[in-house]
Image 1 (cartoon, rainbow, N blue to C red):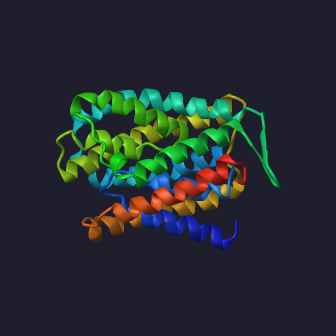
Image 2 (image 1 turned 90 degrees about the vertical axis):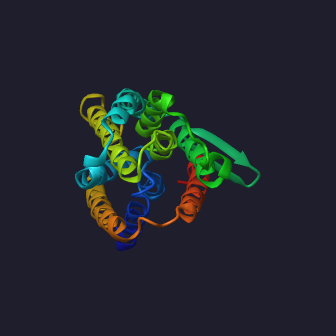
Image 3 (image 1 turned 45 degrees about the vertical axis):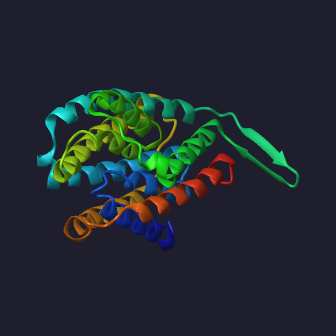
Length: 265
């Protein structure tokens, strides 16, 4: 991998991990489009999961003691179950060999069902980040199990778990420290399940996708940069407003969604 590739991943992971420590989401959402530029989409999801999971281990070590065990249980049980279902669906879609070809005048291209689905999901979550109406969505505490199911499923399928998780946890009556700790613990649970499911697909279900040897250094770069970002964020950036981060995230998702869905990447 070129040095510019490592730099792109490092800067994205550093920025996202630092600025989104207190929002509970953003690292996976920002990092997935960057990985998707260099890897097949299913590999990009798995690579993002490894970085995201390692980062959550680090966050839990720092703030996990503040987690609300009741909220973790009510949200986490359904999140774990549906994360495995979403990850299994990703593996099934990765095995499809169908190609969807299109043309519009002098333009033409070819995509796959998985790329089309992932592009559609990125488009949806881009709107979730960019439109105030979506950003302001909140759910009452009684819907925590539903939130776990939705967040877990999309976490397993595409890695987009944090924004939905935050929308459900924000009304759970948690203080700042409890919110950060609870979100980190739940995120780690989901990451553990989806990484295990991806590994199972690779080892026992025909290896529909795999992390190549060349991807390991890039993943390591992402992990180290994310760790650094968490340390910086914990010390200095707890008062940062997230609007411009959401705008950056949404814009990146829109661009990559278009490129991915049309088969350009």
